[in-house]
Image (tube, rainbow, N blue to C red; front, side):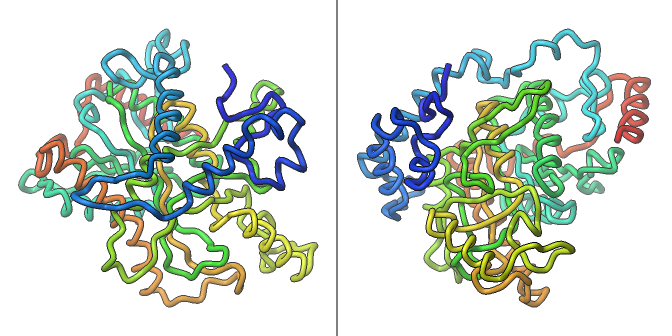
Length: 409
């Protein structure tokens, strides 16, 4: 079944005019392209109103969202069981004696994953272990979650020595490392974790930092779309010697709901924008300060101005994989980043450490507002759920999982 926005030639109908002219066929230049572009332009207008924690959308945006949700409903049988629990698009997992999540140091038969994670609703991912630990303590305070006396938050994946994971009631806070490969490995195992734990309709967030394009440091950007270094909204993945393209899509409604939660009292701007995701921090992002550089400052500025004119507002290295894999799994997701530098003004991050620390808290605050509002609406605030301690079903298998996780490269 082809993607509803994708032409047979592989070009997304919502692509920029320049991309359509460069790569599009006659079909996608004539069939609904102008309509798609108008919808995207209208969507970018900041016309949302936030009243009583409800997002009121203009009529044309409601129609677009309804069309998108109908598309998702058509895929629901592939990615959900009738009760709403996550269904894997991999028939081999059910036939395995045990599924070891190597990089999380968890196993489907060594741990009681339903007891440990069955109440999860939100998965919040960030780059570093320190950042996700800070978010875990922050969200614990925001939602009023209390740990049993004499206990502390546990890094559930400490034996993997790769990622860190904390659980605060219905919230998982997990580090994803740096770059597309790292976040891709993590997402495979976290999506499988959702399946084994029988989690219903989870919502995934990525919070992090980025470089701005024409916007000042400290600005919060909610991604409406993720594109690669060639401005294509797809993740290209070689599988068995063949190149597969997976649409990198984020949930439109979730994006607008997050934007509506930005407060007028926030001493910084929050905006919706297009995010370019690269495979490299230096050459891939047009920096002049890497170990290698075969282009001039004029070449760099021409590139940055070109992507800026195409609608790109920020650059980072994870959103493409995050958007593509969550969309492929049928999981609602959003990316919220804070800019550390305006790349049109320089490559180096020069803000003081204390300023950078405060800036990095801004995406956390916005996502926590969403989680808190959701739990308030569901009457689940201050719910003392499972706090993230280990529930071992088989000590022998538990030891095996630890050993396997320690030695897998």
